[in-house]
Length: 260
Image (cartoon, rainbow, N blue to C red; front, side, top):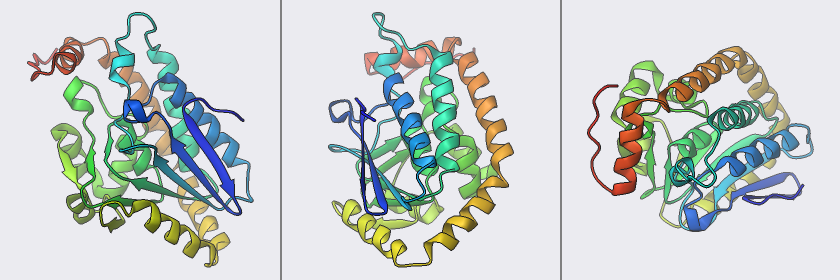
């Protein structure tokens, strides 16, 4: 299958998916969201692949959703369609029959961070910047962000991170349990490749079987979260605070929220 915004390569038992909009910091537009969902569905039926690496081209992993595309008057994104793509990609990623590794350099923000958190293992560089920063434009996390954060750090800490929207570095993320492997700057890809090859020398079929047992038992909860995220995001898009957040982003100023 040919893709416009991502690359998917396979070598032996390892697949590598690259977010490939480097000039936009790999921000996800509606095309990339659909292509990610399509690629994950392609991999879901490929049991010869046992490890999947997800990385970003250029200087960052992903800046999150493409805000400029959200407000493009020439080609506005349809939020209903967008949430369908996001729901599909998050659910399929979580249920993949591969060990998934997020390879983080630069930043992983918003939907980009949700995507990374949906992976089994997160490898990040020390100076990488991670943020669940939807709150800054009056939105809620999507892409399963609520579910994946709660799985890693619990409900109370997930709320703090979602409501605060702070940017944290790799070291802070590792200490909080959000990152599994912290590596020196510039070493994420090498470290992730070594990890992937190490997994292939392990009884990986048993590991994948355990992943399936654990993740299938959470399928219904994830589906419920994705449905609630979708409904909430469509509603938030129509709030005054979201419009103010978008304007402030474009005008490069601090937003003034009213709670509406």
